[in-house]
Length: 292
Image 1 (cartoon, one colour):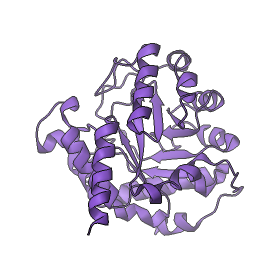
Image 2: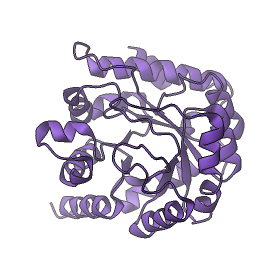
Image 3: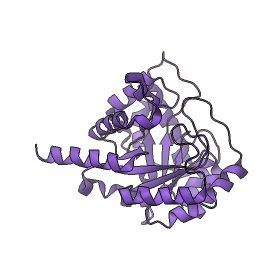
Image 4: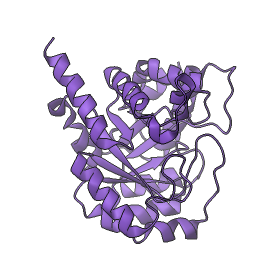
C-alpha cells in the first residue's frame, strides 16, 4: 500500500526544467528498443571487480573514453568503493575529492552525461558543479541528511538505490525494497526533487543474499507500481557465482543473462562494467523481438 501512495504523491516544490538530462536520455529508449547503458568507472583501489585499474587519471580518462566509444549512454564515476559484500573501507571527504578532481571534470567533457556515485552530499554538490549531471546514491537519500537538499537545489536527477547494512535471509525482500523506496521518495519529494528526476534501483547484491538478488530481478515488475524508471546493476555480482562459481571478471555470461531478463521486465537503465557485450546482447534481443 505504501508504494501506491508514493506513486501518486507529488513533490512539495515540483517543477520540470527543460534541461532535464534524465528526460532527454529516457526519450531515446523507444527508438533504441533497449535500455540505456550506464558504464562503470571505479576510481578506487578496492572495488570488488576492478579495484586499482583506473585509479590513476590517465587510465581512468582513457577508460571513460572507451566506455563512450563502446556505446555507453551514461558514465558512472565513483571514488569510494561500496563493496556490496563487506570489506568496504570508508573514504574521507578529502580523499574522495582528491581522487575525483583530476578525473571527473575531464570525463564530463567526453560528451555523454556523467553520474557521480557517492553517498556524501558535499561530494555530490562538488561533482554537479564540476560537470556531473546525475547523482547515484547507493543509500537512497537515507544516509546523508543533506543529500536530498543538494540534489533538489541543483535540479539534478537521482538514482535511489535500496541498501541494507546486512542481509537477512528471513525477510520478504520485495516488501523490504518497496518500503525502502517509499521512505526515500518521501525524503525526495519533501526536499523538492521533481518526480521526473528520479530513478529507482533495487540494489542487486547490496544487503541481500544471492537468492534475494535473483528474486529482485525475477520480480522487477513489482517495483513498476511506483511509476518511475528502474535501473538494474547486476554486473559481475556475487549471486552469479552462487549459480556457477566464477571470479568477478569471469561473470560476463551471468551478467548478460541477468540484464536481458531485467530489460524484458522493464528496466530503463542497465549499469554494466562490460559495455560493448551488454550493448550487443540488448540490441540482438531487441532485433529478435522485432522479428516475432
